[in-house]
Image 1 (cartoon, rainbow, N blue to C red):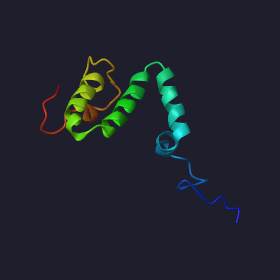
Image 2: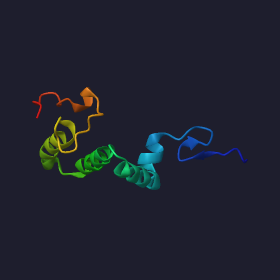
Image 3: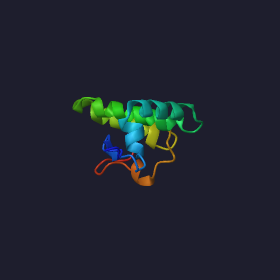
Length: 100
């Protein structure tokens, strides 16, 4: 029938999620990234997103250094692209590590 069926795991009458639109869909991801890059105050969020994806792809031996660089750049007050909108929990050092 013509009931709309399922498309990408979501029924047509449901609102698409942010994850589906801006993470899983290549064009949605590209457009959202461009929005972040061009919006005052949001460029750091776009850079953080890109760096987190790069972190996920790096070798295990490189992860400690990459994580420290991310914390210093985005999570620490005074960092080059501090993301002050992040919650205190997101900015907290992982268990067993001293803050930068």
